[in-house]
Amino acid sequence: MSPAPLTPRQAFTRMLWEENPVLVQILGICSTLAVTNLVKNTLIMCVGLTLCTAFSALTISLLRDRIPRQVRMMVQVLIIAAWVIVLKIVLDAFLPEISRELGPYVGLIITNCIVMGRTEGFAMGNRPLTAFCDGLGAGVGYSLVLLVIAAVREPLGLGSFFGIPVLPSDWTRWNLMVIAPSGFFALATFIWVAKAFKGGTPRPAAPAGAKPAA
Amino acid sequence: MDVQAISPLVIFVAAITTNNILLTNFLGMCSFLAISNDLGSSLGLGAAVTFVSLCTAPLNWIVYHWLLVPFHLEYLQYIVFILVIAAFTQIVEMMIERLSTPLYLTLGIFLPLITVNCCIFGCALFLVIRGYTFLQSVAYGAGCGAGWALAIVALAGLRERMRKRSKVVPELEGPGIALILTGFMAMAFVGFSGIVRIN
Image (cartoon, rainbow over all chains, first blue to last red; front, side):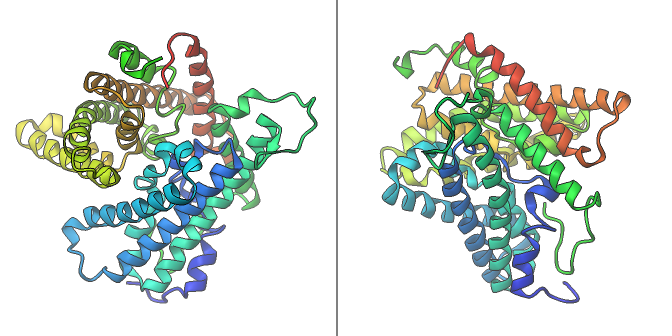
Protein backbone atom coordinates (compact mmCIF):
# COMPACT_ATOMS: atom_id res chain seq x y z
CA MET A 1 0.00 0.00 0.00
CA SER A 2 2.95 2.36 0.38
CA PRO A 3 5.56 3.27 -2.23
CA ALA A 4 8.52 3.27 0.15
CA PRO A 5 7.93 1.21 3.27
CA LEU A 6 9.37 2.61 6.46
CA THR A 7 12.28 0.89 8.10
CA PRO A 8 11.55 -0.26 11.66
CA ARG A 9 13.89 2.45 12.91
CA GLN A 10 12.04 5.22 11.09
CA ALA A 11 8.75 3.79 12.24
CA PHE A 12 9.98 4.14 15.81
CA THR A 13 11.62 7.56 15.72
CA ARG A 14 8.99 9.49 13.80
CA MET A 15 6.42 8.68 16.48
CA LEU A 16 8.48 10.39 19.16
CA TRP A 17 8.08 13.93 17.92
CA GLU A 18 6.80 14.69 14.39
CA GLU A 19 3.99 12.16 14.53
CA ASN A 20 3.60 12.12 18.30
CA PRO A 21 0.09 10.76 18.85
CA VAL A 22 -0.73 13.12 21.71
CA LEU A 23 0.60 16.29 20.12
CA VAL A 24 -0.60 15.71 16.58
CA GLN A 25 -3.95 14.07 17.13
CA ILE A 26 -4.66 14.53 20.84
CA LEU A 27 -5.49 10.85 21.03
CA GLY A 28 -5.61 8.47 23.88
CA ILE A 29 -5.21 10.71 26.88
CA CYS A 30 -8.20 9.15 28.63
CA SER A 31 -6.55 6.28 30.35
CA THR A 32 -3.49 7.97 31.74
CA LEU A 33 -4.14 11.66 32.31
CA ALA A 34 -6.09 10.84 35.45
CA VAL A 35 -3.05 9.35 37.17
CA THR A 36 -0.57 12.08 36.19
CA ASN A 37 -0.65 13.62 39.65
CA LEU A 38 1.91 10.98 40.70
CA VAL A 39 5.00 10.31 38.63
CA LYS A 40 5.27 6.70 39.75
CA ASN A 41 1.77 5.72 38.68
CA THR A 42 2.21 7.57 35.41
CA LEU A 43 5.41 5.68 34.68
CA ILE A 44 3.79 2.31 35.32
CA MET A 45 0.79 3.19 33.17
CA CYS A 46 3.02 4.46 30.37
CA VAL A 47 5.20 1.36 30.36
CA GLY A 48 2.07 -0.78 30.34
CA LEU A 49 0.51 1.16 27.51
CA THR A 50 3.70 1.07 25.45
CA LEU A 51 4.03 -2.69 25.80
CA CYS A 52 0.36 -3.26 25.04
CA THR A 53 0.52 -1.07 21.94
CA ALA A 54 3.69 -2.71 20.66
CA PHE A 55 2.58 -6.30 21.25
CA SER A 56 -0.93 -5.72 19.94
CA ALA A 57 0.54 -4.16 16.79
CA LEU A 58 2.89 -7.14 16.42
CA THR A 59 0.11 -9.70 16.86
CA ILE A 60 -2.26 -7.93 14.51
CA SER A 61 0.42 -7.42 11.91
CA LEU A 62 1.24 -11.15 12.02
CA LEU A 63 -2.43 -12.01 11.54
CA ARG A 64 -3.23 -9.19 9.14
CA ASP A 65 -3.83 -11.41 6.10
CA ARG A 66 -6.12 -13.73 8.01
CA ILE A 67 -8.41 -11.14 9.58
CA PRO A 68 -11.60 -10.68 7.53
CA ARG A 69 -12.10 -7.00 6.77
CA GLN A 70 -15.68 -6.81 8.01
CA VAL A 71 -14.91 -7.89 11.54
CA ARG A 72 -11.42 -6.48 11.83
CA MET A 73 -12.33 -3.93 14.52
CA MET A 74 -13.78 -6.64 16.72
CA VAL A 75 -10.74 -8.86 16.23
CA GLN A 76 -8.42 -5.98 17.03
CA VAL A 77 -10.29 -5.11 20.20
CA LEU A 78 -10.14 -8.72 21.35
CA ILE A 79 -6.41 -8.99 20.71
CA ILE A 80 -5.78 -5.73 22.54
CA ALA A 81 -7.99 -6.85 25.42
CA ALA A 82 -6.04 -10.09 25.67
CA TRP A 83 -2.75 -8.20 26.01
CA VAL A 84 -4.22 -5.84 28.57
CA ILE A 85 -5.42 -8.80 30.63
CA VAL A 86 -1.88 -10.17 30.54
CA LEU A 87 -0.63 -6.79 31.76
CA LYS A 88 -3.22 -6.68 34.53
CA ILE A 89 -2.30 -10.15 35.73
CA VAL A 90 1.41 -9.28 35.72
CA LEU A 91 0.73 -6.09 37.69
CA ASP A 92 -1.48 -7.93 40.17
CA ALA A 93 1.26 -10.48 40.72
CA PHE A 94 4.27 -8.20 41.04
CA LEU A 95 2.96 -4.78 42.03
CA PRO A 96 -0.36 -5.50 43.75
CA GLU A 97 -0.48 -2.16 45.59
CA ILE A 98 0.02 -0.05 42.50
CA SER A 99 -2.40 -2.23 40.60
CA ARG A 100 -5.05 -1.44 43.19
CA GLU A 101 -4.25 2.26 43.09
CA LEU A 102 -4.53 2.38 39.32
CA GLY A 103 -7.91 0.70 39.61
CA PRO A 104 -9.85 0.78 36.39
CA TYR A 105 -7.23 2.68 34.44
CA VAL A 106 -5.22 -0.39 33.47
CA GLY A 107 -8.31 -1.90 31.87
CA LEU A 108 -9.02 1.35 30.13
CA ILE A 109 -5.92 0.86 27.99
CA ILE A 110 -8.22 -1.30 25.84
CA THR A 111 -10.29 1.68 24.83
CA ASN A 112 -7.26 3.93 24.49
CA CYS A 113 -7.47 5.40 21.02
CA ILE A 114 -3.73 5.21 20.45
CA VAL A 115 -3.62 1.43 20.60
CA MET A 116 -6.57 1.10 18.27
CA GLY A 117 -5.25 3.89 16.04
CA ARG A 118 -1.90 2.21 15.56
CA THR A 119 -3.29 -1.25 14.95
CA GLU A 120 -5.97 -0.04 12.55
CA GLY A 121 -3.93 2.68 10.87
CA PHE A 122 -0.54 1.03 10.67
CA ALA A 123 -0.26 -2.59 11.78
CA MET A 124 -2.99 -3.79 9.41
CA GLY A 125 -0.86 -2.74 6.43
CA ASN A 126 2.72 -3.28 7.51
CA ARG A 127 5.23 -5.99 8.33
CA PRO A 128 5.37 -7.28 11.91
CA LEU A 129 8.73 -5.82 12.92
CA THR A 130 7.89 -2.37 11.53
CA ALA A 131 4.50 -2.50 13.20
CA PHE A 132 6.09 -3.49 16.51
CA CYS A 133 8.52 -0.56 16.35
CA ASP A 134 5.73 1.78 15.34
CA GLY A 135 3.67 0.72 18.35
CA LEU A 136 6.69 1.01 20.61
CA GLY A 137 7.40 4.50 19.25
CA ALA A 138 3.81 5.61 19.69
CA GLY A 139 3.88 4.41 23.28
CA VAL A 140 7.20 6.07 24.07
CA GLY A 141 6.15 9.34 22.41
CA TYR A 142 2.96 9.29 24.44
CA SER A 143 4.85 8.48 27.62
CA LEU A 144 7.22 11.42 27.12
CA VAL A 145 4.33 13.88 27.08
CA LEU A 146 2.56 12.38 30.08
CA LEU A 147 5.73 12.04 32.14
CA VAL A 148 6.49 15.71 31.61
CA ILE A 149 2.98 16.56 32.76
CA ALA A 150 3.36 14.32 35.80
CA ALA A 151 6.78 15.80 36.55
CA VAL A 152 5.15 19.23 36.71
CA ARG A 153 2.04 18.22 38.63
CA GLU A 154 3.54 16.11 41.39
CA PRO A 155 6.18 18.57 42.68
CA LEU A 156 3.86 21.56 42.51
CA GLY A 157 0.93 19.73 44.00
CA LEU A 158 2.55 17.50 46.60
CA GLY A 159 6.07 18.88 46.84
CA SER A 160 7.55 15.50 45.94
CA PHE A 161 8.91 13.68 42.93
CA PHE A 162 8.48 9.94 42.62
CA GLY A 163 7.25 9.98 46.21
CA ILE A 164 10.47 11.60 47.49
CA PRO A 165 10.08 15.13 48.88
CA VAL A 166 12.07 17.52 46.71
CA LEU A 167 10.75 20.92 47.68
CA PRO A 168 11.29 22.55 51.09
CA SER A 169 8.68 21.62 53.67
CA ASP A 170 7.41 25.20 53.91
CA TRP A 171 6.51 25.01 50.21
CA THR A 172 2.90 26.00 49.77
CA ARG A 173 1.30 23.15 47.91
CA TRP A 174 -0.81 24.01 44.92
CA ASN A 175 -3.90 22.00 45.67
CA LEU A 176 -5.14 22.68 42.16
CA MET A 177 -2.31 20.57 40.77
CA VAL A 178 -3.54 17.47 42.56
CA ILE A 179 -7.10 17.63 41.28
CA ALA A 180 -8.38 17.10 37.78
CA PRO A 181 -8.54 20.61 36.21
CA SER A 182 -4.77 21.02 36.27
CA GLY A 183 -4.43 17.96 34.05
CA PHE A 184 -6.34 19.77 31.34
CA PHE A 185 -4.32 22.95 31.80
CA ALA A 186 -0.99 21.15 31.86
CA LEU A 187 -1.76 19.24 28.68
CA ALA A 188 -2.98 22.38 26.91
CA THR A 189 0.19 24.23 27.91
CA PHE A 190 2.35 21.37 26.68
CA ILE A 191 0.56 21.35 23.33
CA TRP A 192 0.99 25.10 23.08
CA VAL A 193 4.74 24.95 23.74
CA ALA A 194 5.22 21.98 21.43
CA LYS A 195 3.35 23.64 18.58
CA ALA A 196 5.32 26.84 19.04
CA PHE A 197 8.53 24.79 18.75
CA LYS A 198 7.33 23.05 15.67
CA GLY A 199 7.05 26.47 14.08
CA GLY A 200 3.32 26.71 13.81
CA THR A 201 3.00 24.18 11.00
CA PRO A 202 0.01 22.26 12.26
CA ARG A 203 0.84 18.99 10.60
CA PRO A 204 3.65 17.92 8.27
CA ALA A 205 2.70 15.75 5.32
CA ALA A 206 2.43 12.20 6.57
CA PRO A 207 5.47 10.11 5.64
CA ALA A 208 4.98 7.22 3.27
CA GLY A 209 3.15 4.31 4.75
CA ALA A 210 1.49 6.27 7.51
CA LYS A 211 -2.22 6.58 7.27
CA PRO A 212 -3.75 9.03 9.71
CA ALA A 213 -4.99 6.94 12.58
CA ALA A 214 -8.68 6.55 13.25
CA MET B 1 -19.81 4.28 55.12
CA ASP B 2 -21.08 1.13 53.50
CA VAL B 3 -21.20 1.59 49.74
CA GLN B 4 -24.31 -0.50 49.32
CA ALA B 5 -26.24 1.81 51.61
CA ILE B 6 -25.89 4.87 49.38
CA SER B 7 -29.15 5.74 47.71
CA PRO B 8 -29.14 5.31 43.91
CA LEU B 9 -30.37 8.88 43.60
CA VAL B 10 -27.28 10.17 45.38
CA ILE B 11 -25.10 8.13 43.06
CA PHE B 12 -26.92 9.52 40.05
CA VAL B 13 -26.42 13.13 41.12
CA ALA B 14 -22.82 12.55 42.14
CA ALA B 15 -21.99 10.88 38.82
CA ILE B 16 -23.18 13.98 37.01
CA THR B 17 -21.62 16.62 39.25
CA THR B 18 -18.86 15.82 41.71
CA ASN B 19 -17.70 12.61 40.07
CA ASN B 20 -18.33 13.63 36.48
CA ILE B 21 -16.62 10.92 34.51
CA LEU B 22 -15.12 13.30 31.97
CA LEU B 23 -14.13 16.20 34.16
CA THR B 24 -12.71 14.23 37.08
CA ASN B 25 -11.61 10.97 35.48
CA PHE B 26 -10.72 12.19 31.99
CA LEU B 27 -12.67 9.38 30.36
CA GLY B 28 -14.09 9.73 26.87
CA MET B 29 -11.72 12.53 25.90
CA CYS B 30 -11.09 11.48 22.30
CA SER B 31 -14.58 11.82 20.93
CA PHE B 32 -15.17 14.68 23.37
CA LEU B 33 -12.50 16.83 21.74
CA ALA B 34 -13.29 15.73 18.20
CA ILE B 35 -17.07 16.17 18.24
CA SER B 36 -17.48 19.20 20.50
CA ASN B 37 -16.82 21.47 17.50
CA ASP B 38 -20.46 21.23 16.59
CA LEU B 39 -23.40 21.70 18.95
CA GLY B 40 -25.84 19.52 16.99
CA SER B 41 -23.52 16.54 16.82
CA SER B 42 -22.66 16.98 20.50
CA LEU B 43 -26.31 16.74 21.45
CA GLY B 44 -26.69 13.60 19.33
CA LEU B 45 -23.60 11.92 20.67
CA GLY B 46 -24.44 12.95 24.21
CA ALA B 47 -27.87 11.37 23.94
CA ALA B 48 -26.43 8.22 22.40
CA VAL B 49 -23.79 7.86 25.13
CA THR B 50 -26.38 8.39 27.86
CA PHE B 51 -28.64 5.75 26.37
CA VAL B 52 -25.88 3.19 25.87
CA SER B 53 -24.34 3.65 29.30
CA LEU B 54 -27.77 3.52 30.96
CA CYS B 55 -28.39 0.13 29.31
CA THR B 56 -24.92 -1.41 29.39
CA ALA B 57 -24.22 -0.65 33.05
CA PRO B 58 -26.95 -3.01 34.33
CA LEU B 59 -26.15 -5.52 31.56
CA ASN B 60 -22.53 -5.60 32.62
CA TRP B 61 -23.56 -5.86 36.25
CA ILE B 62 -25.68 -8.93 35.45
CA VAL B 63 -22.98 -10.54 33.36
CA TYR B 64 -20.35 -9.91 36.00
CA HIS B 65 -22.29 -11.05 39.06
CA TRP B 66 -24.30 -13.89 37.55
CA LEU B 67 -21.82 -15.26 35.04
CA LEU B 68 -18.25 -14.31 35.83
CA VAL B 69 -18.29 -14.47 39.63
CA PRO B 70 -19.93 -17.93 39.94
CA PHE B 71 -17.41 -19.40 37.51
CA HIS B 72 -14.42 -17.47 38.97
CA LEU B 73 -13.72 -15.81 35.66
CA GLU B 74 -13.34 -12.27 37.00
CA TYR B 75 -10.09 -11.81 35.12
CA LEU B 76 -12.03 -12.00 31.85
CA GLN B 77 -14.08 -8.94 32.76
CA TYR B 78 -12.32 -6.62 30.28
CA ILE B 79 -13.02 -8.80 27.27
CA VAL B 80 -16.55 -9.59 28.37
CA PHE B 81 -17.46 -5.95 29.06
CA ILE B 82 -16.11 -4.83 25.70
CA LEU B 83 -18.07 -7.58 23.97
CA VAL B 84 -21.28 -6.68 25.78
CA ILE B 85 -20.87 -3.02 24.87
CA ALA B 86 -19.95 -3.77 21.25
CA ALA B 87 -22.80 -6.22 20.78
CA PHE B 88 -25.27 -3.86 22.40
CA THR B 89 -24.32 -0.89 20.23
CA GLN B 90 -24.43 -3.08 17.14
CA ILE B 91 -27.93 -4.34 17.95
CA VAL B 92 -29.22 -0.88 18.79
CA GLU B 93 -27.76 0.49 15.58
CA MET B 94 -29.50 -2.18 13.50
CA MET B 95 -32.79 -1.66 15.33
CA ILE B 96 -32.75 2.09 14.93
CA GLU B 97 -31.89 1.75 11.26
CA ARG B 98 -34.97 -0.43 10.71
CA LEU B 99 -37.35 1.50 12.88
CA SER B 100 -36.76 5.13 12.18
CA THR B 101 -34.63 6.85 9.57
CA PRO B 102 -34.62 10.31 11.20
CA LEU B 103 -33.54 8.82 14.51
CA TYR B 104 -30.87 6.82 12.73
CA LEU B 105 -29.52 9.94 11.10
CA THR B 106 -29.34 11.84 14.38
CA LEU B 107 -28.27 9.06 16.76
CA GLY B 108 -27.35 5.96 14.81
CA ILE B 109 -24.29 7.35 13.10
CA PHE B 110 -22.69 7.93 16.49
CA LEU B 111 -23.17 4.44 17.79
CA PRO B 112 -20.06 2.87 16.20
CA LEU B 113 -18.02 5.62 17.87
CA ILE B 114 -19.31 4.56 21.24
CA THR B 115 -17.93 1.03 21.27
CA VAL B 116 -14.50 2.33 22.11
CA ASN B 117 -15.65 5.29 24.17
CA CYS B 118 -13.73 5.10 27.42
CA CYS B 119 -16.67 6.63 29.27
CA ILE B 120 -18.91 3.59 28.79
CA PHE B 121 -16.19 1.08 29.50
CA GLY B 122 -14.88 3.06 32.46
CA CYS B 123 -18.37 3.16 33.89
CA ALA B 124 -18.54 -0.65 33.76
CA LEU B 125 -15.17 -0.98 35.49
CA PHE B 126 -15.99 1.54 38.21
CA LEU B 127 -19.23 -0.13 39.13
CA VAL B 128 -17.45 -3.42 39.66
CA ILE B 129 -14.58 -1.90 41.62
CA ARG B 130 -16.87 0.11 43.87
CA GLY B 131 -19.14 -2.87 44.42
CA TYR B 132 -22.44 -1.26 43.48
CA THR B 133 -25.74 -3.11 43.72
CA PHE B 134 -27.95 -3.56 40.68
CA LEU B 135 -30.04 -0.44 41.26
CA GLN B 136 -26.98 1.61 42.06
CA SER B 137 -25.45 0.45 38.78
CA VAL B 138 -28.47 1.62 36.82
CA ALA B 139 -28.25 5.02 38.51
CA TYR B 140 -24.50 5.18 38.00
CA GLY B 141 -24.77 4.28 34.32
CA ALA B 142 -27.42 6.93 33.76
CA GLY B 143 -25.42 9.50 35.71
CA CYS B 144 -22.18 8.78 33.88
CA GLY B 145 -23.82 9.17 30.51
CA ALA B 146 -25.76 12.26 31.50
CA GLY B 147 -22.68 13.86 33.03
CA TRP B 148 -20.67 13.17 29.89
CA ALA B 149 -23.46 14.58 27.72
CA LEU B 150 -23.68 17.68 29.90
CA ALA B 151 -19.95 18.27 29.59
CA ILE B 152 -19.80 17.84 25.82
CA VAL B 153 -22.87 20.01 25.16
CA ALA B 154 -21.52 22.74 27.44
CA LEU B 155 -18.13 22.66 25.73
CA ALA B 156 -19.70 22.70 22.28
CA GLY B 157 -21.68 25.79 23.25
CA LEU B 158 -18.58 27.51 24.57
CA ARG B 159 -16.57 26.67 21.49
CA GLU B 160 -19.33 27.87 19.17
CA ARG B 161 -19.49 31.21 20.95
CA MET B 162 -15.75 31.48 21.07
CA ARG B 163 -15.43 31.05 17.32
CA LYS B 164 -17.64 34.07 16.78
CA ARG B 165 -16.17 36.43 19.31
CA SER B 166 -12.63 35.70 20.32
CA LYS B 167 -9.21 35.47 18.78
CA VAL B 168 -7.17 32.51 19.91
CA VAL B 169 -3.39 32.18 19.83
CA PRO B 170 -2.73 30.21 16.63
CA GLU B 171 -0.78 27.48 18.46
CA LEU B 172 -3.68 26.85 20.79
CA GLU B 173 -6.42 26.74 18.20
CA GLY B 174 -8.53 23.60 18.07
CA PRO B 175 -7.84 21.03 20.77
CA GLY B 176 -5.53 23.27 22.81
CA ILE B 177 -8.13 25.87 23.63
CA ALA B 178 -10.78 23.17 24.04
CA LEU B 179 -8.62 21.60 26.75
CA ILE B 180 -8.27 24.92 28.55
CA LEU B 181 -12.02 25.49 28.40
CA THR B 182 -12.53 21.99 29.76
CA GLY B 183 -10.12 22.81 32.55
CA PHE B 184 -12.21 25.82 33.55
CA MET B 185 -15.33 23.70 33.40
CA ALA B 186 -13.68 21.11 35.60
CA MET B 187 -12.80 23.84 38.11
CA ALA B 188 -16.41 24.96 38.14
CA PHE B 189 -17.48 21.38 38.81
CA VAL B 190 -15.06 21.15 41.72
CA GLY B 191 -17.36 23.72 43.29
CA PHE B 192 -20.03 21.03 43.56
CA SER B 193 -17.91 18.95 45.85
CA GLY B 194 -19.73 19.91 49.03
CA ILE B 195 -23.06 18.55 47.82
CA VAL B 196 -22.62 14.80 47.57
CA ARG B 197 -19.72 12.46 47.91
CA ILE B 198 -19.23 8.95 46.59
CA ASN B 199 -16.04 7.07 46.08
